[in-house]
Length: 256
Image (cartoon, rainbow, N blue to C red; front, side):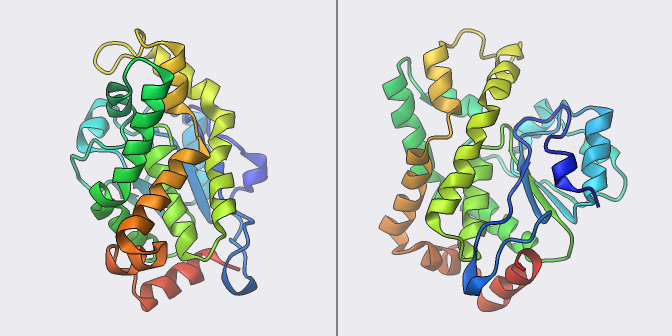
């Protein structure tokens, strides 16, 4: 397995990084090299494919919709034996194109749109979040989860997984905010898109608001859960079906 310190990025993929070292439940910590998050793999290079292959992931979970996967097909299917899990769905919530469509023409409108998206994600996207956590509890080896830019849907999925492991809320927000380092590359990739899904006419101010990893967005996600379901742990148990057996499997897979 590749040492992630030797491969902090995957060539041709934006916002790739490891999620590790955070303190978790009962004095344990996230196991190094076990959880990775990123943007999509429609532009990954041959070298990038080799980098992913060297990580030997036991699960690659694509959170994108069916339409996104058809428009921007992954190249990871060129790697033999990879456990790709693209749960078929048509939920556009969290898709950057949908987010930008909802964002209006000012940064303030964009911020409000993103808060609304994050407030709806726990419920409208619940079937996919549920499937991701259930799949992550099965098998062995590293887990790689991604969407299109690796921020919104991926941020929600990772936040819930870390919550199930007992990681502190501040650490979860810290991991989410690390996407800020990838924003210039994300913007460049979006600006380069032509034809359907083009972003070339959008103002920088609105685009910046949508691609930003503002802690306020993820806080809105948690606040919506707590307002409707009482707590994140109750949400995980009641809405996503994480029973004690599945929680233990997640602990065994991700914690040292």
